[in-house]
Amino acid sequence: MNDYLLFRKMITPPFIHIIFWIGVAAIVVSALGTMFGQNFFAGVLMLVLGVVFWRISCELMLVLFSIHDRLSEIARKPGSGPDMGT
Image 1 (spheres, rainbow, N blue to C red):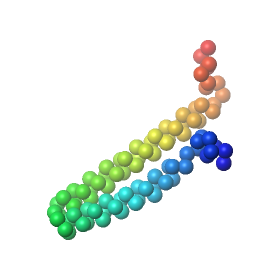
Image 2 (cartoon, one colour):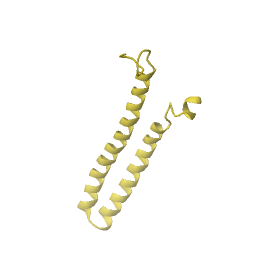
Image 3 (cartoon, rainbow, N blue to C red):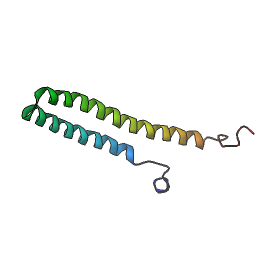
Image 4 (cartoon, rainbow, N blue to C red):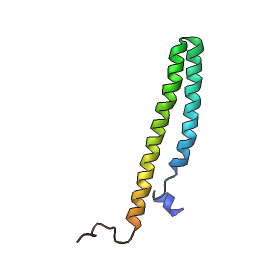
């Protein structure tokens, strides 16, 4: 619990998966509305490109948290402090 309070352990990564699926649902609904309401080709384009770009955005967020985790592991290793080379 202390790790969560001191921001050593992040709680956001599991929520990114939920946010991803909510975003995909919103993109699909918007794309279907565009496909059947205005322009079919634009809706198909929105569906494909929207989901791809949304996936890339969510993956980039997860990569940032993964980098944080790896750097935290490195910092916890003995002898990895700032005075290591001196």
